[in-house]
Length: 489
Image (cartoon, rainbow, N blue to C red; front, side, top):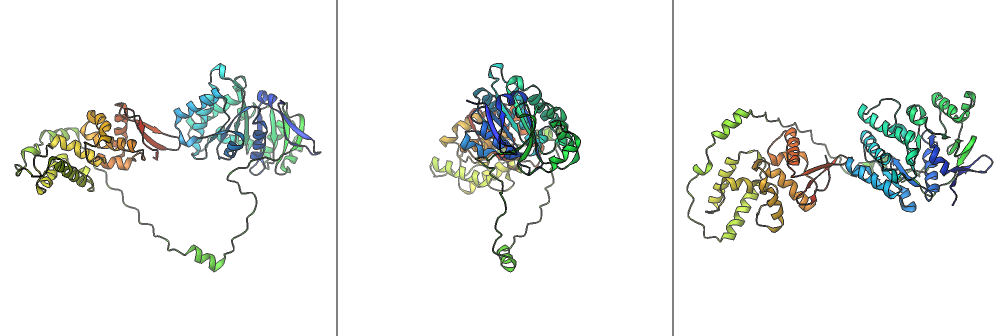
């Protein structure tokens, strides 16, 4: 099997080849302005070498996911996993020599850089017996190895730049051959670009980029003007894996295409003028409601004041009237009525912001109105039963909730409602409750208290909070072996 692939043809029509074995040892830099055919070149290289070598594509725009079906690449959606999971995936990819596309189009720039850095560093740190040869293609490399500080923090820039430097400077001994593509050489860190020995330079217009491209190609400055005149899909190639002298190459055809690229013009719609206006205004435009003023945050209660309130509380059981005569209803009916009362109370707005003693007094009044006596629900039981009702568990005898309630026995009363809310979401496989919903059942308007609540429950081993690179949070209940569906934070 030949390790040489045809990348395109020169001006005379003769094929221009790339020696893949040589490329693994010497790396490749591709440069070209937007629209010069840079992505087309990378796609041709990937398609032609797919059967020869493992391929790992860092794809910030999701352009290369269409390679998956015809060529067997695995698409890894970077937004769907957190840092630890990305590292585990990268380790398995290295071990099993899987060709993959790390699609980062669902992430913001800073998250893209973090995700790519973790992924590349894990590939780089693989055990020695897993140093298999692999092409690591990084599109839009100036994003991951910027020449200057930009819109991201210094920490993220250093992390990403270090990973790219390892790939290009030290990756060869580990079997990793970097193929990096950039729109502008001036925006790419010089220590990353300088490690490539093969070059394919496409059309560019700025003098600084033409001068750097000419230097890399070993051309005189006056010859750099021809770089500006290159047609789309035409490149100047040089390097031990391509040619010993600069050679013009027109990139060959590809079998796949990007999923989101419009290839040329489209016919204009037939409707115009008044007809188009009637289409646009066929339905009334809904008026956006004015923004609601934020509710004032309750001032924190001083610890001494809180202790005084606790010490001065009179048990409600000592204040209520003696119960009425026992009801004639069966015990099962009484339990059902109690569950219905608790569910009704839990559905009332702002119920969780009321003191437990006041809620219990309301509960006893409702029981008397329904001629319910000897319910067996004292204040301590009421606190936990009400927390269950708020979380959507009105009946503590239903079999599906027994495991959840068993785990919840050790949860303090004031933390029970939010914990049960997360646990029920895990059992039902529904979306993780957001901070607003957790604050509502916790009886607070402070986002900081919710963060501290989650941290406390996680440190107690009751939950595991997971946030993927897309910013979506899910919460697992280790004792149940279940997790909620992810939801945007």
